[in-house]
Length: 386
Image (cartoon, rainbow, N blue to C red; front, top):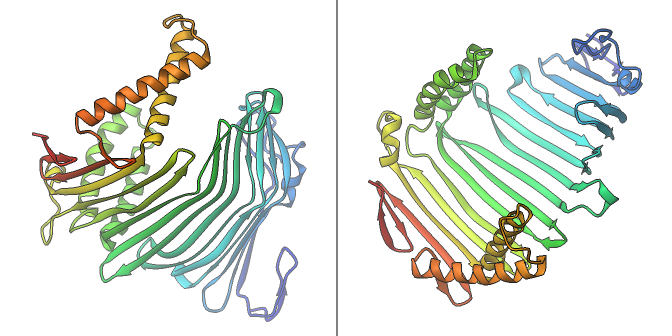
C-alpha cells in the first residue's frame, strides 16, 4: 500500500491506498468508416477521465470529469455547448454506502428549430443499502433554470422554468421501505404569462424491501432476456411477467399519497391532495385481476373559478384557431376567437356544475372523488363501476 500519493487530477492524499484504476477516453467508435479515434472537432475529450481508488478497508472513491466543449450534433442539425461535468462518489466496502455529488455548470443545444438551455444543475446524495440492490437515504437535485425557445428572431423563451428542486428521503421500517419526495418550482413562464411558485409532496409507503430487491433483479434479468425480440413479441411476454412482479412488490398494504399540491397561477391558486391504498393485510399477493377490489382511493382538487375558466378557454381557443387554419371554422380574428372561447368556457363550467362534476364553494370550484371496491363516489354521488 502507498502511504501518500497523488490522484490523476493532481490532489495529494495522505492515506493508504491499495489500488488505483484510471480510465481515459481514447476514441469513439460509432460503427462508421474511419471512426474509432477522438473526433478532431472535439479535442477536449482527451482531458476527460474517470478514476477509482481503493483503500485498506475495501471502500474507496470514484471521481469523474468531462471538460467544457462544443460539438456538432448531426442528428439534430445543431450545436451542443457543454460547460463541463464533475462527479464524485465515496463508497464503503461492498458498496454498502454511497455518498457523493454531481455538478453540471450548464449546457445548451441550438438548432434551426429552436434552442434548449440548461443552467447550473447540482445533485448530492447520501445512501445506504439495507436490501440487496436497494439504496435508501437522502438525495437532492437542483436546477437553476431550463429554457426552451424557438430560434426565429431569438425571442425570449416561451417556456422558462426556474429554481427547480427535487428532494428525496427514503428509509427502512423493519422489512418495509418508504419514500418521501418534494418537487418545488420557483417560477414558470409560458407564452409570456408567469406562474408559480409551486410544490408537490408525494409519499410511497409500505413496500416490502426484499420484494423490491427481487423485483429490481428479476426485472433486469427479464429485460436482458427479451432484448432483441420484435416489439410485439416483447410486449406479449413482458406484460404478464411484469404483472406477476408487481403483485409481489405490493404484497401487504402499500399506499401512495399526494400529501400536498400547491401551484400559484395569475388567476388564483390550485390546491390538491390524494391517497391510494392497496388493502391486502397478511395475505399472499393476489392475482392482478383482484387488485381492483383491493384499491381504496380518495382525492380532492380545489381551484379558483378563474383558473378553470382560463384553462378551458385556452384549450378551446387553440382548437378554434387550428380549425380556422384548416378552413373548418369561420375566419374570425384571434381576438374574436379568444372572446368566443371565454363565453364557451363559462358555459362548460355551468354544465359541469349542473352534472355535479364540479362543486362551487364561495369563489372556488372543487372536485372530490373516493373509490371503494367497485364504486366511485364523485362529489358525493355514487357512480357504479361494475
